[in-house]
Image (cartoon, rainbow, N blue to C red; front, side):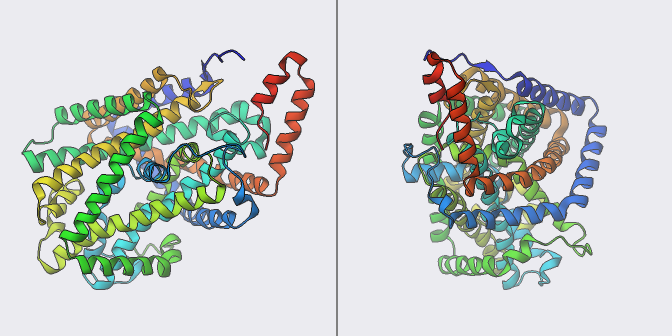
Length: 535
């Protein structure tokens, strides 16, 4: 066969680009109206569907664990002949880094410390107590840990099995083929893919926006360089250039290397905080938090707060985080499946949930636990610094109370920079792939990756430069709104996985392959054999 000619998938590329650019311009020209509209839609979706977001998110992690113990878990992602492309450490490093992005770095100190000083009402705990400390870290780790990666991994299974075991196009709609059939190639499939694309970009832009604010705060804290639009723009330009170059180099020469470096930095930071901080306290806190995670998992996951005892806390936190995660899920999941080919379904599910989930617990104990200790026993008043200067300075405020701050604070800034790159690298490559025709996941043209990389970076610059923090928050709210249809698609996705598990999908795809081979001219039968994967 000759080399396939790669074309733009206009039905996804053009609507996605137009809607994104239109929303940015609308926000630029009519900031107040844009913010009001996004807040209105955010309130409407979280108030009306928050209960559904919570139920669906909690269900998915248990469903993934159920799939692990079925015979389907023995199947290999990519087919019987597929072999792992990455060693275990690199695989785990990319799994952690592509999902952790800037968010966990951003919230590492501020979120658990806030819950310690002001426990959520549903816990019924008194502020600044031992119970509030443990529960505060547990809730923060819950928001970014096992359920977080459970949602990603579920979508990775849905889309990855159809893409890598049955050669369907590498885009979210392919995962719904077992239910929608050939409709995924028509308007319905295009709408699904465009919505996933827009939700992802909205989430990605806000992650970059929040990360840039923290990066700029670090420069101020270390070097006295005050945050400004010039700093924001320069930071985003450097980051955008970095992740665009990394994405263009491909996974093995780009993201795999950066993820390894970033993973070593994360491990070094956790080790430092355990050793330089109150070591025994941190070890005890780790065990306490793991115990609290087991005991309070259901209560935390399903806190819809019908009586609004927390004055909207659940909607603004747990519901909000679950929706933000779901906005990323189809495309992050596709990337996780991409780097997991050659592993069994069981390995894919367990590693992608348990490894990053446990890492997140250690991360929040090391940062959040240290901050709680400093405030509780050393009167550090880190919470006062956060209240005065905001979440972006929280990590630096903690490290300022520990040894070697002149070394560790720049390292955190470096980790933040690499976190930018790993998230954006994974996403620009995936966006490029899904907006092209006649393509496999490794063939995305560099120019298309550059386009989506620059557009995402440009959107972030406009948000911070023109819209300010309120504009970034509004784009985040927009991402939450886009998450609603993805939650609805998840219902269909569960049915699809069930059909995969009982063998229906494999039988149907095998029958289609036979029909295609029989109908094709003799000269094309080799091509058919290559283009339609056996189950």
